[in-house]
Each structure stands twice: as structure tokens, then as C-alpha cells.
Length: 117
Image 1 (cartoon, one colour):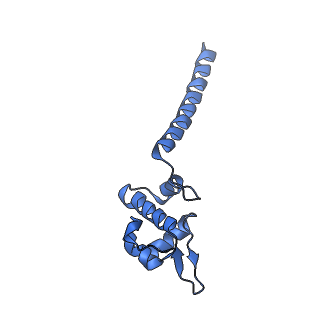
Image 2 (cartoon, helix red, strand yellow):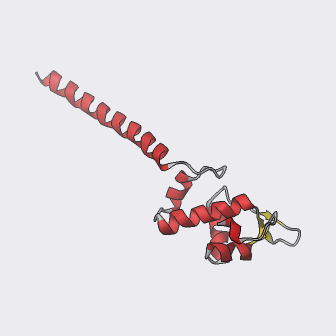
Image 3 (cartoon, rainbow, N blue to C red):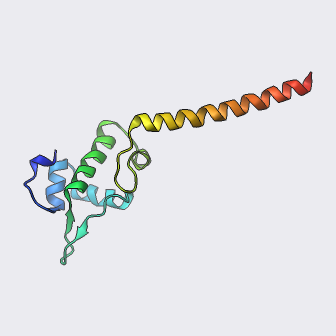
């Protein structure tokens, strides 16, 4: 995906917006929502994205537009350091939590039934 960009250290917000297929205002909004998107600013105030941040922008777009995640869903899926959490890991952790809650509820119900006998 980043291969469509020329090899540079930093990319201007307009270049990133064009590659991602979103408006620059969308990128600025994403910066306010996602801690992992923090482009450096030049002395003139121009936002400059690294290759890693361009990859993150493309991942965010994919999750939001293609996978239909919410903003909060993307925040849970990508760590504040910009690392994508695999969906298997998310579901595994959710399953453990869900089962423990169910087991606690069943245990309480069984105690109530025992006390009734």
C-alpha cells in the first residue's frame, strides 16, 4: 500500500490523504481520536507522516470502512503504540471473560437452589 508513495522519510498530509482515499479533514479527525496517529509538524506547521503512520492510516481506513468497525472498535484493535491486535487474540480474551461471568452466575444460582432444598 505504501509502495504507491515515493521513497521518502516523511509524507505530507495531502499525499497521505490521496493514497488513503480520504479527505485531509478526516486524517485530522483521526489524529484527535487515535493516540497512535501523531505526525510530526514542520517548522511551518505542516503535518508530516512517517511510513509507519501511513500504514496505520491505511489500517484504520480498512477497519472503519471495510470491516465496519466503530471508532471505539478501532481503538481496541490497535494499541496506543500502533500495534495491530490480532482478532484471534481479541476473541480469545473475550471468551475467557464471558465464560467466567457465566460460571459465576451459574454458581450463585446453584447456591440459591441448594439453600432452598
